Image 1 (cartoon, rainbow, N blue to C red):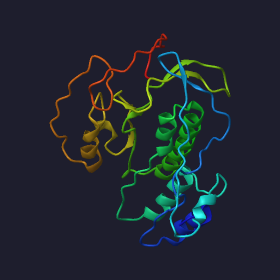
Image 2: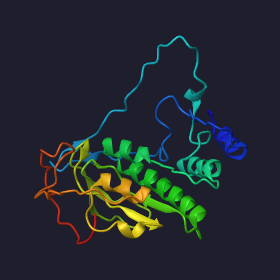
Image 3: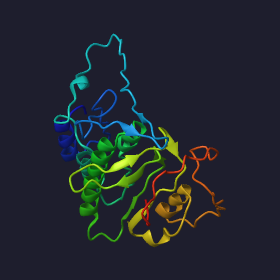
Image 4: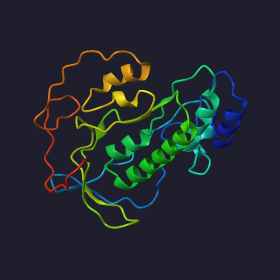
Length: 238
């Protein structure tokens, strides 16, 4: 499938195998307005240039190159189509990833990060609407990592993007929240390793795991401390 219309049609016809090839690279952003220059924890402004891919192949024009916000399916629409395709008496496993949230955070772009998160929330609401009243379903919402070392430092009021600072461009080792609803959700408590979610989803006994607490946030390799946020933080979960 290469368009929003074909994705919707596929959800109705339910073929055996479906592959959505909607864009040659990055799907359209949910936000295309002005981007404020990012501020790092070192106090300096910085921005990341958009990467341009040079496609010199000889396969002719790619029909997906003209994909736009209006023609490409949004995450919530793809999620709803996937639920329609998979729903059946045998049950299923479905993973939906808001990957553009990560891409926006790699660029330290709070505007796109917010809008991609709002689309992810819309997707979550669609999943919960499908799961309402079911006794055989587990829904888990989490992240595989944090990106950018994002700190919200000040609210600018309703309808405005918050004032933020960023710690880096790449992934960090900061803990991320995990939320669960439904069958087996009570097994997710406290601080757990991400690999423990497999046992929760399959109903298997949890594997023994020794967690080593860190005294400071570390990067994806567990070795380099992040720069501390220079602003006071409000109490509560980040």
